[in-house]
Length: 325
Image (cartoon, rainbow, N blue to C red; front, side, top):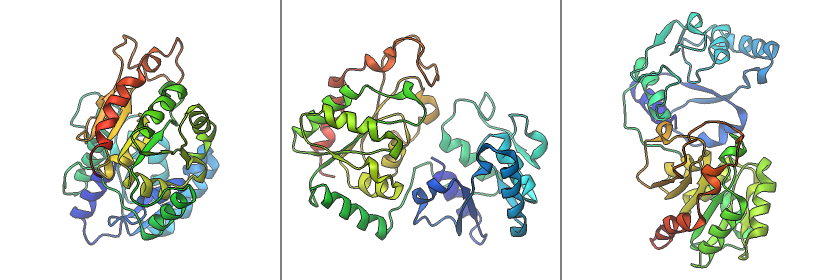
């Protein structure tokens, strides 16, 4: 969702050497991109202050002139200051104003943490340091190596080139409150398989048990790529897919970056923070008075998602399978 900002930054600073600091596990997501000269994995100390200081000090020899602080956290701004970045720019808030050389004032109400699409959140920071807007579309890339990996994994699952793929992503790292019931996912998977589509389950390795539950509850066979645990594989597989059915989680945004139709199931969260790039997204939710609550664990009966019937999701997903990829 930050890619519109990345694109604007490169457009406005074509001759700059731009380095992206990011968590190591996320590096494959941006493989093949044209915006960064280097992807530099950092852990921000992994929540340990001593480790954060040590990691930041190791960046000092790089002598960065400008640091655009995308997260709104205190620790991210502290890391850039300790790294000796000459000018740190970001949104004020979370008590970190004194760490910023330039505090950007958001154009929306509610401050940096207000309900605003993440695309706009990052794009405005990029524009504040000289970026040139290039639209708000999401954009990712697949390398030849990632495509070859997808070829191997799909072949190993018995899926031949050209077969229509329907992808289910039943997980969400946010917490159990975002999870649509396993039995509902299984019902959708069976309905999609009945059209002749090959059903694939994707997700993070930590979601293996969840995916296995969906697969076990399905009558039709489904391929499980969750245990492969590669963001590069996820990109390459989603780019080839006809439709994705998922919770309000990361797989949705990867699919949108490749123009793949998505049916997204909303429970405790609001569409207000992700209300751009919806041309091929169908956002389904139940009108219950307690949502959006943004709680990670539902304190009552999880009615926002348990009441969302599989039949609604099937009706939303089937048209995508009827249309050539």
